[in-house]
Length: 511
Image (tube, rainbow, N blue to C red; front, top):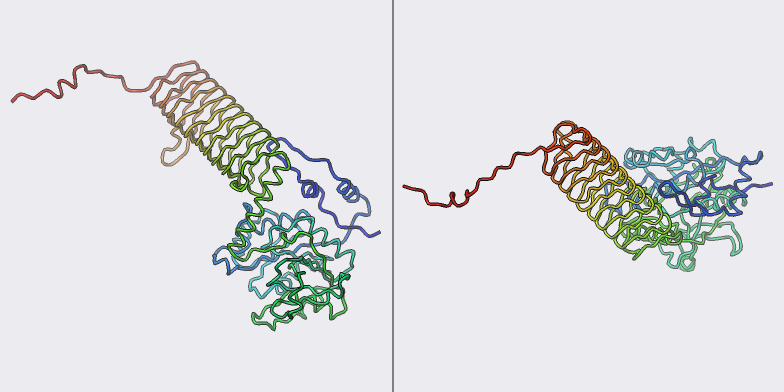
């Protein structure tokens, strides 16, 4: 019995059901009957199928972007174009079976997406998409089929990739191309089918070569393919570069394989948006806006309130739990996770941070690589720099900056304070204007403030220094030595009052 190709276990659930994970809490809808059947088959003894690779075309410069940055590293939805395509590909096949064919600024591309675990094939000289597959010949030679994706088309979904592959396998084709129907197909190659009811492709005609009648065809070649590897590698040398650019086009493999009596078919996606590539800054902006709008509506469908979604910037990998409220002009970036029942108020910018259930982020707060525990309150206008860890029910208030600082449960620093390289226990009150002096010009040192200590306003703590449990620091003190628990430390100059000083100062001096 012929088996269909499945999304990878685990990845399938996320792709199919739109599950979210926020903080320490997971919410996952019930698995569909389709997914349960796929996972059951995956564990059956005869589940082994064909070896499938994915090749991602990512070698180009993108001259129309007028940028020194490689085309595939321009960002939409908060991460590089190529990273989106890799994420879709690795939901279908393991990362070890994904090959990114890179060329322009190859080292930069490797550095940007190397953590994904995919392989890289270097196309040192870029002579077209067909040439890219020639360069990848050795890497692909042990596979039965290869899916070819475009590294600048970030909206492609795992479902579409899997459906395209399954159609290819069902049709027993040498080449399957993904097509789409556009209202305005100008500029795209047109797909000519053998007849209106046939999956078989007679030819792909480029815009410049199309007749007036062919230009009326709205079905276009999207630039995504599946090939039977033996047929591809056997005939790829038949590609010619007799064109104005002297390049080898993978599109021409349709004609080559048809001439060799091999089966070439097309499968049309119902969602043309996902095949659109980014060739200009305007197209990047358009795709970014689409992705962010779609992200907002996905989150709202899962129980998140977003006021004025068009004003918010929410990256693709952000996860937010139900009953959280996102006010206008909020930015949630990177891999930020937000728990249940939070409120993120206007003009806050949060990157790569974890926000616990029920937390309140007041207006204008900036959080970067930080953690905020359940019920904590941040802001307004707080700045949490990397390594900040704000405990349950703690308060970080107006114009307070933290860096690599840990605050325990219920501790407070509500005004005009800098806490850097600090370990602060539970129930601590940090008065306005307090500074931990953590840097001596060469090294960083830690300040430790133990549970229930009270730090008076305008205190300077010169690290390394420790304040013991339940100790008090008098206002305006400069603390340079450890303070034992339950002690009072006062370190400031003795006040001197000179009565009548002003009068005496202003009196005329004798001759």
